[in-house]
Length: 579
Image (cartoon, rainbow, N blue to C red; front, top):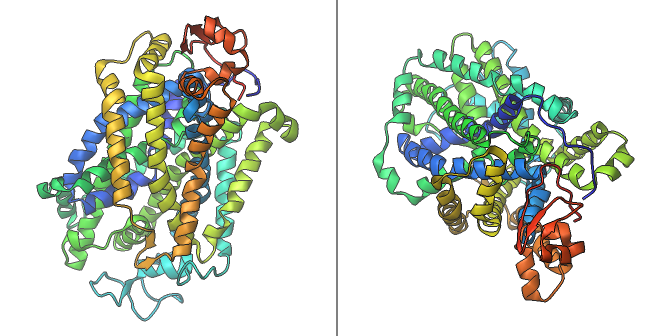
């Protein structure tokens, strides 16, 4: 790794906390959490969800923030330092974040499209008197498979203009393409100065959604039927707790919502001051993330109760699915509310803020990791870091073009299925093995003590050593056993498309074995010696002077304190590596 100037830090520590909240709190809190609650028996889902927060979410977030703050590097070099054998996990984190940022921005594009459309009166999804509506359009949901609501047809026939399947590419939706460019321009100007600009933006993007959520909740609870929806949300169907799938979904939701394995929070924490109180940030981010999910649950389910009242059907019979929850079901509820345009504008602006925070984090992972590795080469070529950030955003925007074609919804579903569901569980499992087992709980506690003066307590050490690896391993196994091919509504993707999906998944996973093979190749000695060195922290930093490591001491270049064979990272930032 090339030497670079002293690493910048957040102007104020509250900026990291807000950025962390913005990264963790995203669109998944508003659509995936309520959807899983709805599908898993309402309140029954809250029991495993809160349990997984305590034994999985908080300890693993704590682990990532400690590693990021201590090494003062992005995920690639942080993982290479703590466990050279599994350095590929860090590269995979960067790869998955970049893949996700190319298609995740499509959801921000949709939110902007709906936001602009919300200024019309009446709302364009409020009735069936539009050019895109079919003869089967109805203003009210029915159980008939032959009819579709006005909001469904706005989403499908107006915004997406979707084709019949992934085999039919169709044309570019120029409106969506221009909005996609607008979304990337917004993102660029929010992050082009690094943590100095992002730190200012998050004061608004992280806090404003809560104002809107509270306003929506106050409005919704006054609507007729709202109590029925809230009752469905908080009263458990205890029989559902016997389903293994509910427990796996709860763990996966905690996992994906906080963002363990994506490298985003690890990269952000690398800009912290060395002596920052990591535990305080961990608890703040994790707890606020879950409270946001609960708040969004009350908002969404009160709207469900209102819709069930209007349509005369039970809450359990409403048609609810992932993106459809936000872009079909909820807009349908708006159309029947007083001052519908106001609530629609507020809701979709909130989605925009939620999406931007998460997108910032994913792009920042890529920028941080490449700057850590190739600082002087990149600065020599681009002259300024701002131009390099522009190049990253431009590349991601170009790769996102298929998503704004008429086939875009199928491309989005395919990428999301094989990235967010398949890849992330592999990455997370090996990250935990690298940090908790190879690097070790003792070393992690030593690092924490050096930064804050206090070691990790027994609860965290047990979670790191036993609970988290076992639990994530079980989730991974069940994810494989229960794996289902990608589909969108009733459309099942053809075999060739599933193959493309697996290639997308391998685009991140493949770096784990490749990184391991490269480490074993460059280290000296027999295979057994290579293997021992590959799980010794800091080995790659000193591969050019291994004799020094053997006799102990402190490396003059890296600042790594070495005592016999127990290499312990103690140098405060920045660590220098020679990968």
